[in-house]
Image 1 (cartoon, one colour):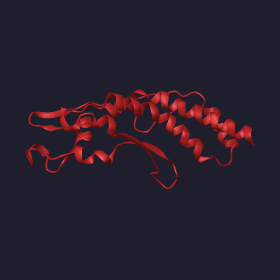
Image 2 (cartoon, rainbow, N blue to C red):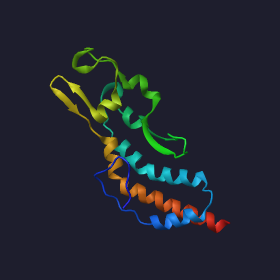
Image 3 (tube, helix red, strand yellow):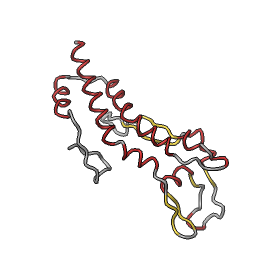
Image 4 (tube, rainbow, N blue to C red):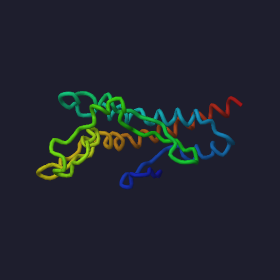
Length: 165
C-alpha cells in the first residue's frame, strides 16, 4: 500500500514500487527531467477532468473557470522535491475578483475570489452555499491511476537510463 498525503480515507495499491526502489538504488544520480515527465503525466488526467467538470457560470464569468485552471510545478522546500499544484490563472483575476454586494454582511468584507467560492462554497443569508468541489473530486477520482502512471513512467525512465549507459 502506498500512502498519499491528504487522503487518509483512501487506500491505494501501486504495482511496481519494490522494482522502482531497486532501480533507484542502482542509479546514483537521478535526472530531474525523468521525474518531471512522470509528474506531468500523473497530473494530466486530473487537470483535464477538473477543466471538463468546471461549472460554466453566467455573464462575464461564463467559461472562465474552464480556461483559468492551470497546473504548475513548484518546489516548496529546500530538498528539491517538486510538486504540481492546480491554480487559477492570474490572467483572469479581474474577472474572478468579486466585490460583495453588501460588504460586512454574512462575513464578506473584502473582494471574494470567484473560483474559490465556487469550489469550496461561501456564507449566504440562509446558511452556507455548498461548493461544487470539481477540482478536489477530479484529483480523488484519478489518484490511483495517476500514481500508477508516475511509477510506470519512472520505471521506464530508469530502465532507459540503465540501458543507455
